[in-house]
Amino acid sequence: MRKSVPLQKNAGIVVVLVIVFGSIFVMLLGGSLGFIGLQHRQSLERVSYAEALEIAEAGVNYYRWHLAHDPEDLQDGTGGGGPYVHEYHDPEGGLLGYFSLEVSGNMSCGVVSGAQLVSTGWTVDHPDVKRTVSVKYVRPTVADFSFLLNDNVWAGADREIKGPYHSNGGIRMDGENNSLVTSSKETWLCTSSFGCNPSQNQDGVFGAGENSDLWRFPVSTFDFNGITVDLAEIKAITQGGGGLYFAPSGEYGYHVILKEDRTIDVWMVTAVNAIDAYNTETGWHDEYSVIGAETFLGNFPVPSDCGAVFVEDTLWIGSSSIESRVNGKITLVSADLTDPNKETDIWINGDVTYADPETDGFVLIAQHNNLIGLQVPDSMELQGVFIAQTGHFGRNHYPTTYSPYHKREKLEIFGSVVSNGRVGTKWTSSGVWVSGFDKRENTYDPEMSFEPPAFLPATSNEYEFKQWEEVD
Image 1 (cartoon, rainbow, N blue to C red):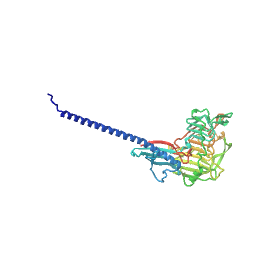
Image 2: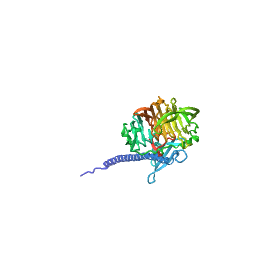
Image 3: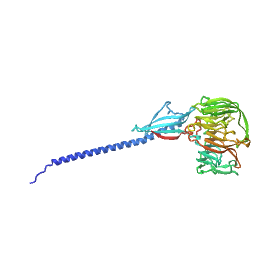
Image 4: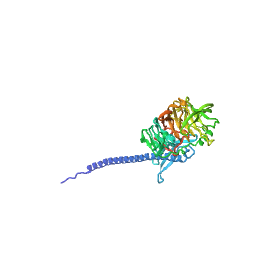
């Protein structure tokens, strides 16, 4: 006879095992679900992190659009201080997030020359996940070039040019260039005054210079009328109490020296001496560029909030023994707007240098010619942007009568030359140096457009990125 075996004990063991393994399964399932949930949240936060940057960049793009429509407004159209918070929507109109803008700018003489934007973006879903970008917006200016010219030009073999070089005319480039050399001409007639004998058609850019792979032609023509400075605006601002204004002298003009303490010494020129000079525009002529007598008018501080100085007469700057020192941002203008039949020249007679090259900036604007005089340092240094609106920048040819001043050793320009006419600071005859500077070096100042002096001519009204960085 079989005996039955009780199952209660085995059944209890099974129940215990089910409970144990079930608990483990529940724990594992809970952990897995928690991990999956965490990964999901982190994934959403990563999406929001990327979207926050897009929203922040949308903020700076919005303000670029705003500046295009209201270039002088640094208050987002509110008339009050920031930060300025805007909603950001998707293409269907749904609210995705917000951006907050902090706006500051470079303002001198009441004119905005650039804007610094700090934009912070975040999403509706994760408002604590924020990204911030800092952007510098400026208009491109003539300071983006070492030379910007409106006529044919010959850069000789002694020339060393560091920075973009452009002419609306043809270019003979025999010098050394380390950046783009561009001409608006496909071909041009090179004559004997450019070293071509007989005259011959040449490419827009040609010559014996190195780095010909950086030569480009034809390119778009620069509109010199478009970059012409509004001299009447500068005059009105300085007459209205911004900057300094000097009325027509009734004599020959004014002589100024810029000083390191941000003041200028000013003389009225009461007599000038005529000397023999030659240029390609007028040939041999009497040049009234040497000061014969002058009367000291005083020392004048240049306002810190408006570094514009408008001289309504011919202007001499510096001397062979006294350099001009620029402190801060200064724009010095020579123009006669009272007589439509008269245009003024500037004579540069001495070094012009920065007290602090990292922060200072100088613009010298001549209504007609912007010329280096006869009695100048043997090794001359000019820092700034030198503009000849309707004439040319250069140094005339002087005969040996004025030895040793007719020949100078070296000219260094740190900045830019903007000239409507042909530039030239060295004269040769049959390949022999006879007048001007033997060696010439030009280096453009790429920082000038970041913090420009007042009224530095822009080459476009559109603001462009000059600097972008993400900040913590």
